[in-house]
Length: 407
Image 1 (tube, one colour):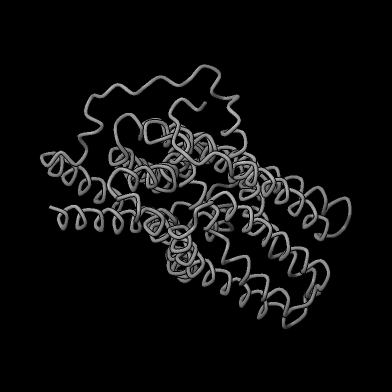
Image 2 (cartoon, helix red, strand yellow):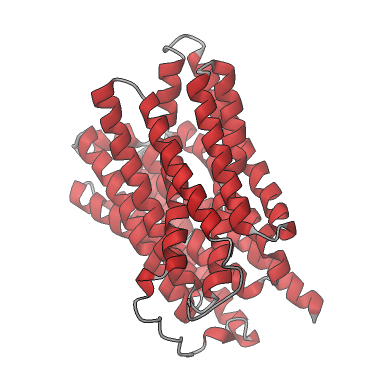
């Protein structure tokens, strides 16, 4: 019986890894085909960039929605809805050249899909089917699906760009997600006979406490995770132009930038596994979370002190090691504090503010670059935000046990 449960848990982890892996295509094709989309939809860079920002905000909003659905009906059904919405989104892209239809497909269907196929429902899935002692390493393995997805799929989209048109790539991806949806429906139908999802069969969830949105633990988790959103936004949007500024757009700039990004991806993979193992041996997850934020602060401050090419390589390795660790720890702490009844919804709310902090960093960072003429002030912004998150993490140390009433 124990071996059967272990086998099912391993399948869940592999399934979560694959879902996160394939979910990167929802954002990856948009990034790689960005220039072609401007021509395809007869629009401009500004409009298309705004759509990308709305996508990020919608992803945060939908994270709370899919978290609530995961708590009530079970994560597997959320994952099915995510694959089906991805099919709908890519079908819209494939059969319509209208920019409004693209906005609807990307901001609504794609944003919902990526929310329903990544951190929140997958973490709930692991909580439901993986034993407590193995959850941290399970989180680490599944979140690496995103890292591996960017390492493998992003170069694939780059290679196909120019060879395969936008409509053709979207048609192919819509078919892939439709097949995945059908397979998942049959799988859930079969496994329901074994009562794998019996904890969600028409059970009434406890009501959320009154004024839960003022709960101190929730506010501290939001503040802690906001630093993760700010620093990840810096990497996604401002890191490459910051490197270009430091390297003075020299001939060697492309080499150092490419190497730095590769090291970031490799370190992200290695770091998430190492931190997943470390969590299983660490008694104070908030303390470990604070240490990761302090490490990011130190790495960014080191770049400010010594803006040299070699330092950029070292920064990429150090930052990459902490990259997914903060997500894994926040997910675990959310489950410990709020319990499985509320974990999905609460983690979704926390992830919403993660996205908002990312949008603010992108916007304020752009303003700082425009009016101060340098990307280095953006580093100070992110450092201050990370320090705030580190302090909030330290304040979480007293909260160690599950308390469903949030008291």
